[in-house]
Image 1: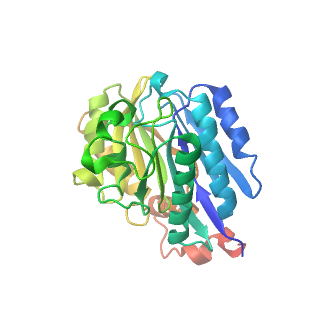
Image 2: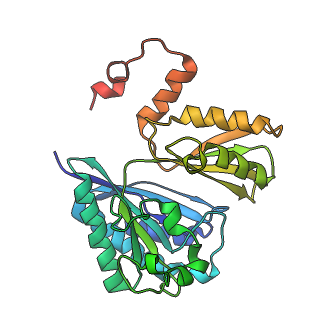
Amino acid sequence: MPKIVECIPNFSEGRDAGRVEELAKVAKSVPGVTLLDYSSDASHNRSVFTLVGDPDGIAEVAFQLCKKASEIIDMTKQTGEHPRMGATDVVPFVPIREVTVEECVEISKKVAKRVWEELAIPSFLYEYSAAVPGRQNLAAVRKGQFEGMPEKLLLDEWAPDFGERKIHPTAGITAIGARPPLIAYNINLDTSDLEIANAIAKAIRGSSGGFKYCKAIGIMLEGRNIAQVSMNMVNCEGTPLYRVFEAVKFEAKRWGVNILGSELIGLAHSKALIDCAEYYLQIEDFDYDTQVLENHLI
């Protein structure tokens, strides 16, 4: 069976459809790579692409996308609700089939080295690729964002893994690494009070005592005038989507707030969604391996 690696680059552009389409054109241009999905959010001012391919193709398309993003996105003029530090903000590589985590780590280092040598964009290695303690967590790496990064890079413990202690003047700095699959999952609230979303996010995220595999922040969706709990679910076996949904609903009641709806950003693994169906339908003695039709067709 052929080797398959997933790459989910996040770009600091979600408002200019023309620029997003330029990135999509690049994503479709590399042999051995398939663009599965891409979506943008104007409030976040961010686009997320999902690609799969062989290791060489994925490494090439990741570099080419970083190059294009550096040409069309100027971070000195970029604003948005989502934390960010570079035109290409983060480039994760995920092993899918016949590929090890170690191979994805090597791909991340190869891409990071090339991004510095050919584009003069420095990078941090994060998650499984992290070579420095404290850099596994993307939130810690990104802290300070684009505006605070020049000062941060001068601290002893924050030298880039590739590049000099200064950001690219318009493209910033990028986080590159290998990581396990995650699901970007957001819940929208029927309130314009961002503090409520922040309080709920604090209650449910693992770093402040909530669910171990949940990373969460509050975000304001200006276009809809509503607050959102924006999450990365890094292990939906350990913390299922239905559990955080119910926790957010429970916490929101404290302020007399309801859930308007939830959304997936990019792709999700089928089991994470089927687990939700099993929970809410209260299916007895359900067996994912034998009772899901598609599992017999793979």
